[in-house]
Image (tube, rainbow, N blue to C red; front, side, top):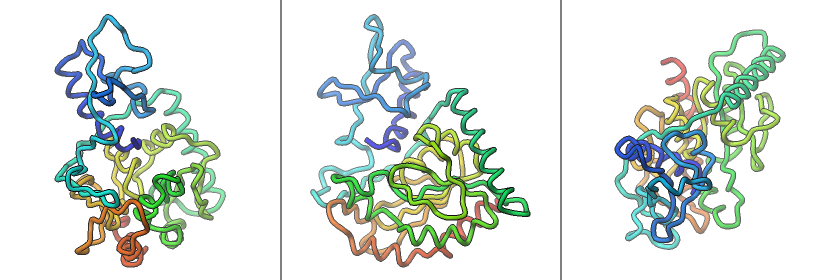
Length: 283
């Protein structure tokens, strides 16, 4: 599963733990009696480390995995397309160590110095930015994530309109394409990126893991949904969710390039995106 999916189940884990505090809550495949660990679950008091369970205490396995996601209608889905269920996510929970918060604050300090070295005015807000999935060139998942993607040229166009007024910190991973004029940390794993998101004003990026992190941290966000999945399925009402309204939306195409998703990238312009950013930055 992706980190966003891992976050989605944490609210259920908290509910079960409250009801049965003596149980060790783990997440995995019930049919195989198999549990999974995720970096998302680290430091979470409601989820036990499945690698280090106490055999003298009861174990509660939540059946939640890539073939049992609550927002996918598996009966109606076909090999090339997901069909979505009516679903409303509940913001999850993520817990940071003191060291992660310390490192995140250090990155913020470095980003502010970067701003001062390049500008003679104060920034309006601090934005955490993601521009693409880590799986966009993955051999198994690339078409899905390319269809969901807004496109690097659109992101560059948007950032060029923002970077002189907003301090932007760009996420860094193996698929990141650095955008000139904005700050990018030297080292950034996913948990540290999440801790960093806690320290900024809001998140801007594609629908996915960081959108769910923003919700868990009660952070404002502007998210590109395109026409692949609807915010009515997986979005949060307190976020600005940019969706391509079209008769083919949401398409859920995952095994080939989608012309409908390509059209969404053309229709949703940087100026349109910008208006949503102005809306939350002034609220």
